[in-house]
Length: 123
Ligand code: HEC
Image (cartoon, rainbow, N blue to C red; front, side):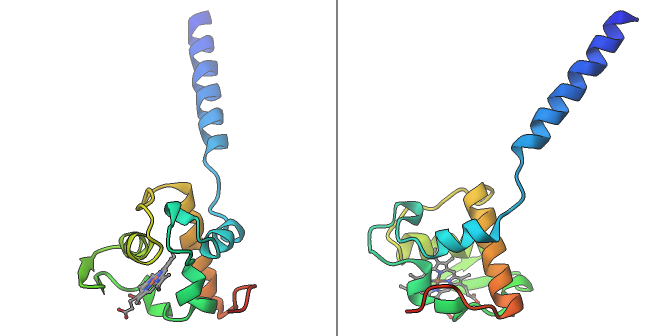
């Protein structure tokens, strides 16, 4: 009986710690990444914002598309497209498509294209 209680407690603690690790995607942090030439270890000095200021070229349709053709490559996810831009345009290395940076970036792009809100910096 006692072991049962201890086991239940242990499970509860594991669950609670797991939950606190997962963070909501942050559009604010995504905005910083979008403006950063260092994203993915970029080497060209360009940020996403250099070519997509205020979300230019990134339409609402982005979130309905299933297949993307970009710079001669076919990609089946938005994350895949973003990584092509990181590699080809920022001169960096693809980031984890399921990682926090990608989640934040996508969250920012979503607010950008859905609200028509302009990014803070002007180019
Ligand atoms: C050197 C300029 C350049 C930079 C920097 C750049 N992109 Fe792009 N991006 C492009 C071009 C060119 C396309 C392709 C447009 C086309 O084929 O219609 C594109 C396409 C995209 C698309 C797909 C649009 C669509 O409707 O299919 C997304 C999403 C995107 N870029 C996101 C980003 C993100 C995020 C960054 C920063 C990591 C970034 N881009 C940096 C030039 C750039």
